[in-house]
Image (cartoon, rainbow, N blue to C red; front, top):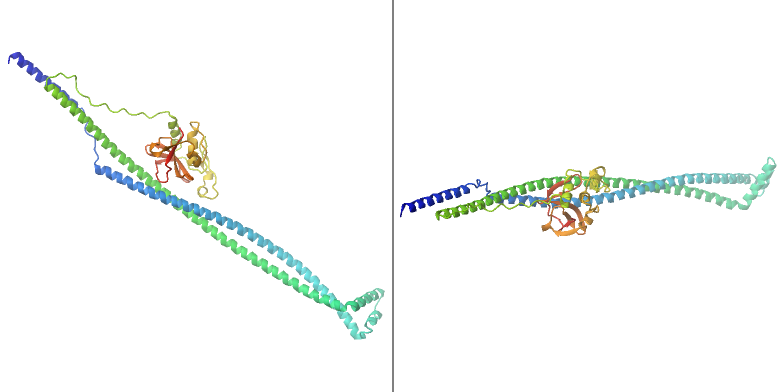
Length: 445
């Protein structure tokens, strides 16, 4: 081996060493490994999510039962209200009957007094005739009565009296007897009418007190149930927040795991590139320069300015707005309406400015020229149905069953939805609830 050959070997060896060192330096360009949560950490987080989801489901069922009980109690209140109305009408009728009976009794008393006067007059006339007959004898009684007359008028009167008595003495006595009977009958009928009217009035008053008491008890039961429902809803909201926090924690752990796996993949690629460069250098083959690893995946940009984004942002701008049953127009929140003494009235929704669930959808979609009916049952059929697995931001989610849809929300992405939840609440963003959810989302865009 000559000197030139030796020199060429040294140059080749030096070049290989430089390439190898350069390649190793590229490997050192990989940043330090990120934290890698353990499987037990992720498993514990998932178990917590599962536990919180189960609690949310249980509270959702309890809340549904509480709502059903509240509806039942409201029906009972309405029934008691009608019973109160009936008792009031009955009491008024009994009072009117008592007034009429009192009037009839007063009239009967007047008639009885008149009948008594007639009896007294008949008795007086008979007494005079009998007295004259005893003094003069029955044969001359009439003559004596005429002879004793004081003046012509008295003579005529006595003659007429004697004529009437002589023709109908028995009939006059019968009239007197019937007058007595009539008087007694009128007085008895008057007393009976008064007694019956007072009895009916007392019964009606007792019935009124009874239904008033029942009404008060029903209202108290409804208010108590409403408070329990409110507490359940508060507890459910708290657990939903805990569930969201647990889901965020698991998402963070999984993201950390993914970042660590991405680091491992990048490190593996650079290690492979370094080994390949070293092998090339050892073989003294020139290399065009090292490997740089695969390019990072290009992120997919959200469709900014899309109609769905407009709808979602229009809804999100209403966060914190008060719930008002019947509230919400294409122009914004509006005054709620009365539900006839139900839950909405209990919370005073008719005096609040805000949205109910379907009213929030009306406002959100009006921003892109879509005007929905203010009723969740109609909104469900207003657009295209898509499986829940394909739901996208801007899709509406519904709760209930095909014959009784009672709630609507809007999916905003990331497993979250925005809703106007219930009387006493505000517009909010919460994780999608899977209990009672309809099998399809409605897509309007």
